[in-house]
Length: 155
Image (cartoon, rainbow, N blue to C red; front, side, top):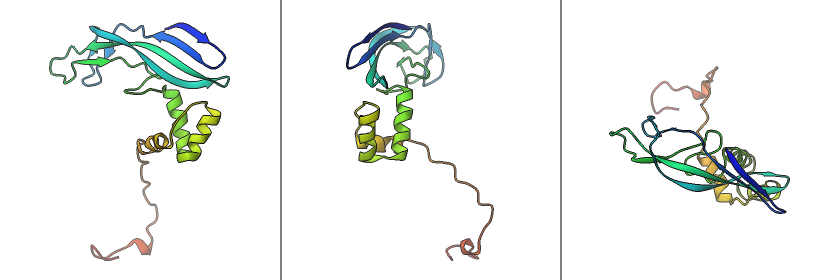
């Protein structure tokens, strides 16, 4: 739920909080409603009107009800907005991943500064590429003579 939106000449700050009663433990999947504590999480989001957007999200830490679960507490995640240990929204993360795939490195970092009014290093863009899953290899439809060997180790 959005509590407040502050705009000024150079930025937009959105204050919000989650309103669910329970959250699922990422370790075991059991729903828990036992609140342990809370904190404010600050996320960067896609710019609006050329101004950077920051989301100040109040999240709660829950206690896991499952005794055998290795996690004692866990933080709630908002679907489509947050991911574990992330300091950016899912939308901005997806945009940065596309920029990283297209340009990577220094060129991608310069484009992000100019168009998304966000500061991202070249190393971050390369890390986003490395974090992506490998594409599924396609099964060849035709096997050529060059790829054939009668015995193992012979090319």
